[in-house]
Length: 455
Image: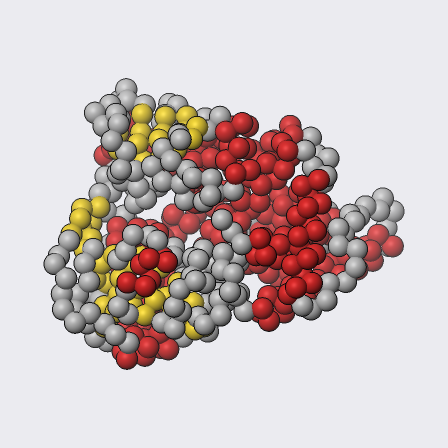
């Protein structure tokens, strides 16, 4: 469960972005858009607030920047109003006084915002607003990953703020909220398709792979997260060094791309996807890719690097994609003194499964390897590597499929919601602990969209 102080600061920053969204939308009605400001808002929506021991000055500086941008956006809107016949509209800032530049004061204001939001909206609206927020953050996160390859990819930036703006109006009827959510799902879906396409264009088609799960003797770097571009840059920087590189967490999927298998220094995958456990066991340095949630505040951080805007204390910052400090740290850090007994697994990526589903009579799909029931009566996709095949299935067949997911990562949850809302698939999760996902979100998906969650 996220720390209440972090929740409060997250709410404080989101409050500024929501107000900027309101003025940006009003100004945008007159075909005037501050693209730089919109882009900054998209980046801020991706910030990882999972770590409690973050650098306070980083947060204060960024928060004050958005306060200033909100004031400027309102000034521009007021100037437009003064020189036109348009009816004036505004929203009330829930924070009725200036927030001093102290974390303690900011936490108190954020807590008050959270309390107000809870008091003045219905439970149904609160749950739908939570769904809006996670859709916004997930889509912004994917857009930032696309911008790593194509900085001109801005076609949905404004639409994200326009969608977020609806949370400024707690009296909005549930029917309208659900209609707007359905409209935004089209954007979220298209962004995911664009990301999938740009990854395949840069790293080749996905194919089945064999992945080593055991460390080799030598100096080591562990790359955790979901940003393929940063993994590529680390592999490029270290390819002529005597350093072994391993993926962690969602970067497991990199092994299915043909280009990544060309790197001789990419030795395999490490760990259980539990960073608190894996990071303490790994004998080498660790890099956490940007904007990815890793709760690393409670473990030793001397060998961890990242490039996030808000950094945990003790984590070394990588600036301007210069990974030499990471490489140098790996050279002097403890490594593995001997090879560990090889443990190699097959990671399938079989498009024929989708062809058979589209052309056959089977309509049940299991997304995951650890669900034992119905093995003989459903097509199994290896999660997460084969998960994207479901989008191929959507485009090949108009049948309504039933999909059971074994894991409950936020990214998988939103992926499943898109399948439910856009394609009317029947969705079930085998296990989704409420301590991992906000209970409001789970309740919303259960009650409003009939997504099932097993106990």
